[in-house]
Length: 236
Ligand code: 6GU
Image (cartoon, rainbow, N blue to C red; front, side, top):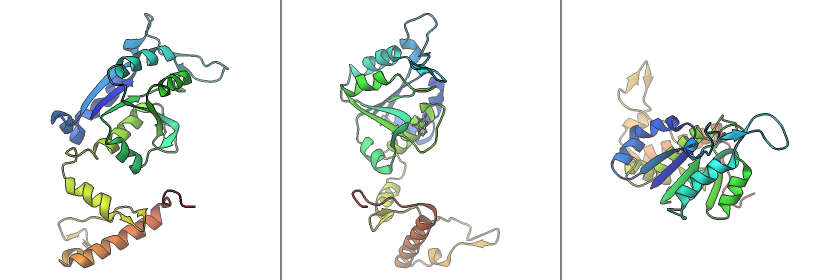
């Protein structure tokens, strides 16, 4: 998968060199390219923002640098999926992450301030697959951290990126019950007693049937306690 990112803060993406994603890039499974929006400005001050039409607080990112920057990337691949991180977008789910993990090419437009001139999205959506995506019901100062979250959620689903492929298979199988995505059951490792706390006996019993039952019950209990489970698509 090729991932392009456009931002005025390229340094925000330094963590992509670390851990699984860094390794995946070294292994040739990912190619990540970070573009500085200011390289596409047309004035000596390298201006990226201006005051909003209609008035109001804050600044809006100018259309011209975004238009020129995206043209340069899209020209080489009109099949690219453009993702605009924004709190007003569709909220990222595991299902969306799974769908995006099969794409060949993603382009993230990371805006700051009060967002990007809306004409940039109008213009792009006439030419490419464009998605406005949020990572939750709160507001961040810019799209960079949200893009990092999305990239981690998406790329760990690409075959070979996650160290242990069995983890992914287990995740996609055992965490779904009665059409509900369950939270993970609690995990334990050695030693058997730590600060007086015992590992549940069933996990050391060697009885795989009982272990599976216990884990399923724990997952259901956690889900009911912590999360309002989203009903399946189409349900009331
Ligand atoms: Cl994707 N961007 C920004 N700026 N804030 C957010 C967000 C995205 N998702 C939730 N809040």
